[in-house]
Amino acid sequence: MQITVTLPDDLAAPLLPPGPEPSLAVLEAIALETYRQRRISGRQLRTLLGIPSRYELDGFLKHHEVYDYTIEDFEHDLATIRDLDKKRQAERLA
Image (cartoon, rainbow, N blue to C red; front, side):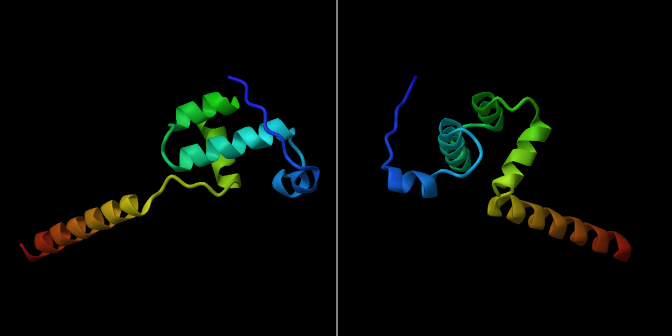
């Protein structure tokens, strides 16, 4: 699918970062937001942007300050740590 977007000249410069082709910048922005919303997977993001490896995808996401670690992940990890701590304390008392 091909999509054409027209931007007013006075807004194009602030909307598009310097460097990559404007079409690539727009594609990256759309793809990153879709990934943030968890509507596509990391594999799909890699395919869409032509990123060859998971390692390079991690670097791309870090560069754009997109992190996969959610508050739910943190809460799950914290609960696991607390459970392990309780088990260790119980073993010491036994």
